[in-house]
Length: 71
Ligand SMILES: [Zn+2]
Image 1 (tube, rainbow, N blue to C red):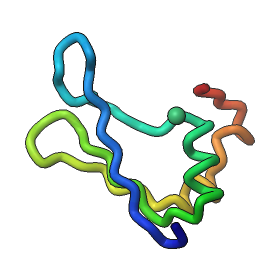
Image 2 (cartoon, protein in one colour):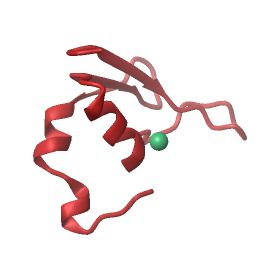
Image 3 (cartoon, helix red, strand yellow):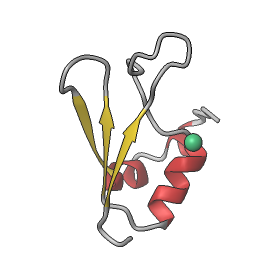
């Protein structure tokens, strides 16, 4: 898994549409970091809209240290 790319898509159960601001939760972020994944590409609502996340940014800017708990 070292330097792998993970693709993430969130689909709303009620509408079947892509989630507008899909993101990983804290627990998944930790597992992604520990797996050595390099990038996460998240599909966003709309045609061909993607966020490309550098996993190193999650390490450098740990939300838990800022008191942000999302999970
Ligand atoms: Zn999760």
